[in-house]
Structures are given as structure tokens and as C-alpha cells.
Amino acid sequence: MTEKVTMTGTYEAVVVGGGAAGLSAALVLGRARRRTLVVDAGEPRNAPAAHLQGYLTRDGMSPAEFLAEGRREVGRYGVELVRDRAVDVVRDGAGEFDVTLAAGRTVHGRRLIVTTGLVDELPSVPGVAERFGRDVLHCPYCHGWEVRDEAFGVLAGTAMSVHQALMVSQWSKDVTLFLHTVGEDEVSDEDARRLVAAGVDVVPGEVTELVVDGDRLTGVRLADGSTHHRSVLFVSPRAVPRTGLLERLGAELRETPFGAYPVVDATGLTSVPGVWAAGNAIGFAEQVINAASGGYRAAATLNGELLFADLDAAVARGRV
Image (cartoon, rainbow, N blue to C red):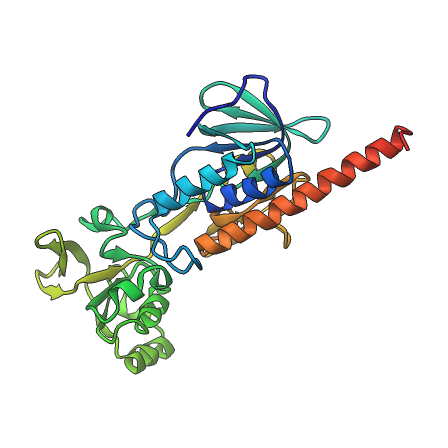
């Protein structure tokens, strides 16, 4: 990534986050001839995955290749990119923004798009983190086809894990739900009947480790010493939204079962005038294609707002 930022850089739009949402926003803004900066900390959520799926014409592309191509595309339209982290932001008296970067510089943006995403905190079972994105997975829409008909395990973390077990049963009829830290009495009668209907086996007891042979997951071991053959394990990470910048600006957040996210309208506009959010910065389940769409919509709205703000200012100055 080529750094082109100056210490006194002033931009019409600063995009914080260089994933699918941020780069999509930057592409729209660059093509609209807006001076735009993308600040990218280089920590994409899907980095552990070998491929991304479900994105029309990009199905199967590696996340790294996808982002590299996105950076090349936005660069053609004069968008500037810097590998750095935005550590602070202040809204000035004119309703514009000063963004401080970890490297020490401050850049100014008339408008701001936050696409900082989230962090997946994985269950603390030995082997889970090392195999995440390979044969330890979290999303059947992302990876289900590639592991279809294999022996699935689902590691429960909350009673919501029953929903995950039921979902993945569409991709395999050999599914075992390991209750792990969830008590049998926490599974409702309705969910128990659904699990039976889906053919999902339920195994109580804490999972202590994964069994790996030849760099392949082969089983799940419980505290009682028993081992259950499984070749794929689905887990439910705890989502930790990266909302620090939005909180500094006083953006309104809403609590969800998957963390606190900013309240946004249909365009991604937050409760702070001039600040949009997109991608996993606004929700846990934003897939790559949804994130790109959200970035596009936010950027198009931002561009229109700047256009009419400038026209109205010209009218107020008596230039027309």
C-alpha cells in the first residue's frame, strides 16, 4: 500500500477501515471526484479464511486477493490509502472532523465513514484458535458448501447455539451439538424437539480440546475422556465491535445479543451528523457482499450531502 498522506492533509471524506465496506465507499467517492483518504489498520475480520464465498463473480477468491484488487481499483481514481490506525477523532465547530493516527499525524475530513468492523473472540478451548477459518468455522453460508456432508460438531457457548446446530444441519445430516458450558436444562422443550426433527445428536459435558491428526481435525475430546469423531467444528465467537471512534463522537449505540452497534438509518448515517458507518461496524452478520453494498450506499449519500451543502453555501454567499 503506497502512503501518500501529508501532515496537513485535508480531505472531503476520510474512510476509517480498509475492508470491503471501506474500499467500496472509497471507490464511489473516488469516482465522484472527491478527495478521499482510507485509513487501514490491516486487520480484516476474514483474514483467517482461505476463501470468501457468496459474492457474485468473486466466489472463491481469497480475502487477501480481494482486498489487494480493491486497493488497486480505488487507487486508479486518486483515492489515497495509508496503513495506520485511527486512534482519536474530534468534531470541530464547523461540524467537520480531525482524525488522529497512531503514527502521530492528524488528518482533516469534512465527512467521515467508519468501517472498523469487529473482532471475533473465540472460545478458549485448546485448538480452536489455531484452526479457525480452516476446519473450525462459524458461518455455514460462508463455508457450508465446502464442508458439506462431513461430520459436523457444534460447540455450544449459549442456548443460542441450538439455532446454529439447526442451521448447519442443512449442509450435513451428521451433526452433533456439544453442550459444553450449556446445561441440558437450558435447552427448551421446543428446541429439543427441533433438534430431534433435524437429526442432531446432543452430547452434554465440557469440551476440553480438539483432536488433530496430520493437520486435520479428527475429533472433539470431553472432560470425561471420551472422544467423538468430527471433521468440522462450528463455533459461535463473541463479537466485539470496534466502536471506539464512534463512542468518542457520542454516537448512539444499540444493544444486541451480539454486542453494541451504532444506530444508523437506511444509508448508514449515525446519530452524529456527517458520520456514516458500514460493514461489521453496524452489525455482526454483515457478509462481504453486504458490507460492500453498505459502503457504496453510505458514500453515495455522503457525496450528495456535500454537493448540496456546497451549492447552498454558494447561494448564501450571493454567488448566484
